[in-house]
Every structure is written in structure tokens, then in C-alpha cells.
Length: 442
Picture 1: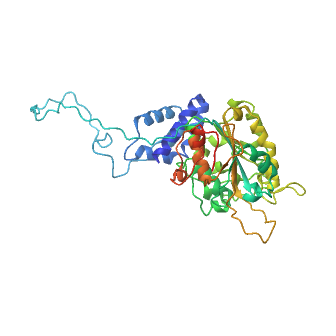
Picture 2: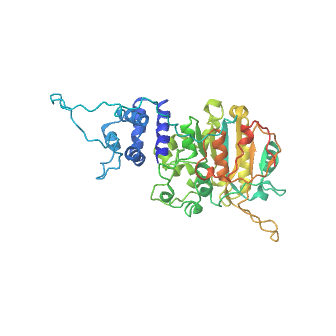
């Protein structure tokens, strides 16, 4: 809980570096109620809040209107106090009385009662876990699609010729990348938050409220913000209720989503399920329509350090989602790649220090061309890494999962892995870049 509190506090400090005055006050005010659980825990915990955090919080309160300040007030002290006896909270309040006479007896100052003149042995501060060293990659573009299956994507009978032909020759193929589940959100939550699949996420969270993560559950986007990196999620056809392009679009808390055929769906956008992003304004600022990507690619300073790209249901490759008479399923996803990937590869940011990850975040296996053929694993989907820092045409047969995506991206930016991505068996492809290698191999 305290780790999450300090992460949110660091995010607010990062925001303060660029936003001041009333606008900053309003931003913090909107987050106070939703994050009161984290703040209250930090203020009333047995260890208390450290002086730096207290000073920062006091500074934030000075910016708030009276209503917001009241909302942040800590809860009334419980009847039984758990504060240590030596702490200021445990000491009774005593008012000084200057006119009071001095005590008749003066405490003894014998050598036995004096403090020892020998210096105390300093106590070494607790060591923090050593973070991985950031590598040369400074711009990561993660494209998330629905997979028709490994063979249908990368095999000799591929239904995605641009991916398996043109792009495959330019990158490193991850031949053993597998999903955790067929559902998009089960893999999305793992890839940006290290969260395990649940019964709800394996059903793509039809009831939005039941899949919302509490504010203390952090995501990759939270980590990037705390580390002063920039991020954007670009979602195809994301629009407000009036049909205009909108940011951070999600169902109402008690609603069941019914996305239009081929259009935007919240299951393609895992960021809108994290209160840590919803409550502090990060989602509204950084979770944007896909139409903004082209403009952001023009200048390196406008290109986020991390870009998550998910087209609409049709262009993602979900079967039966495209208009009749047009490319559907894997063919639609391949056509999307043929349009957007060249735009990324020609951008200054990519040419400078970029990495494109063509990833499958959901499984939509196509019917086998030969009914007599042995069944294949729908969760084995493969992936592709494209970067000027890698030797093209290579393969990497290490076992990777959505947890590996999160761990790899974290390590590329020198961040600590979140949740299940921290597991000892979770592989990362980041060392190939961090070690200065130019190719990944079997």
C-alpha cells in the first residue's frame, strides 16, 4: 500500500513540474476522493508517513479549495492506538508553565548515568533492489492484434503475407511466444500490469465494474510516469457517446458493454481498468484515439517513449467484425499492419532508437484448411521484434508470454517488473539490447 502511495505521490510531483496554478489544483482535487484509501493508509499506518511525503502532501493541500482539503482529512483516531510509545503520537500533550518552581532534587550526574562517549555503530540503511540498467531503446511501439494461430500468421500457408513476408525479413521472430488465455483482457492485464487471468478477465469483463483494479494496483503506465517517461495508448475508433473522437472511453461502472460491430471495445484497452490511471487523470491525458498517432510520429519530442497501439475490432483481426465484402479476420489485421507499420518505421523516433513489437493479445484461431490435420495450440501465437538495433531475419526460440512483454519493456526503461512479471521463470528479451547485442538467436 505504501509503495503505491509513494508512486502516486511521485506522479503528482512529476505533474507539478509541468502544470502549475489552478490547473494543478484542479487535477489534484479530482484525485483526492478516489485515492483517499491510499492516503489514509499512509497517514495512519504503524510507521507513519515520512517527512518528505508529509511535506509534499502539505504542499499539495495548500493548493486545494476548502472542500478538497476536507476530503483529505485523515480518519478519526481509533480507540486503541498502535503507535509506538516513543513516537510523538503516543506522547500526551503538556503545556509549559514558566512560573512553575524548579524541582528540589537534581538528577544524578554520576559517570554511570552519563551517556557513553563511545560512538554508536551506524545502522546501514536497508538495501533497495538493484534495478536493471536501461538500454539504448528509448521508443517502444507495441501493436496488439488478435491471432489466427501461429501457422496462419507466420507459417508457410500464412494468411498474413505482409507480416510473414515483408516484416518477418526485417525483424526477429519470437517462435515460442504464447498467450495466457484466448481472451484479450486476460492477456492485456498481464502485459501492462502483471496481473493473473481471472474468471472475469477470461470472459473479457462484460461487467466493467467487476474488473476495475483498486488505486493501489499499479500499471506499466504508472511506472513510466513516475520514471518521467511518456506514454500513449492509441485506440482505433475510440469515440465519446456523441460519436466524436474521445479519450479514455469506457463503460459506466454498472453497465454491460455492447460495442458496435467492428468498432471500439473496452476489451482492447486494458488501461481504462486501472483506477491508478483513471483517478489521477493519466488515462484522460494519454489514452487517445488512434487518429492522433500520425501527428505524434512527426517529431521525436512528440513521440511517446511507449506507444500501445490497438486498432478497432475489425482491424485487430477478430473474425466476423468487418463489413461484408471487405477483408476480415487475419487479412484485415495484415492490411492494418501494412498501413501503420511503415508510418512508424519512417518516423524519426524509430530511426533514432526505436523498437516495434508486433504482438498478439487475443486468440482468434482460423478453421484449419485441412480438417484431418493435427490440432494446433491456439495459445501459441508468435511475435515479431523490429528495430534498427537488431540484425534482421533472426529467430528467438525462448519461451515468452505477456508477462515477458511487461518485464522486457520495464527492463528496457530501467524499471522494476510488476506483479507476475517479476517471476523467476519469466524470460525477457531486453538483455539483447541492454548488453549492446545486435541480434537475438535460438
